[in-house]
Image (cartoon, rainbow, N blue to C red; front, side):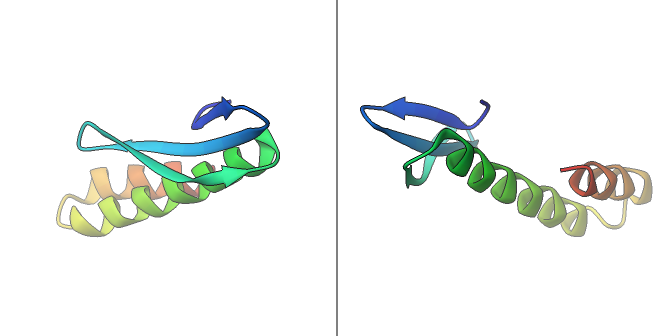
Length: 69
């Protein structure tokens, strides 16, 4: 699953931001780690939509994508 890597008996959630890999914690299931990744991704898309709100089409597209997650 995207945003997840296995580490022994644990699953780590991670994301990439500004070319750097950021850990989101270790979880006992792959699904749990993936859900944390999706939550981070959605919040990041909303943050970017707010940052670029003067660009209406871009902001709307980012929010639309966030709402599909």
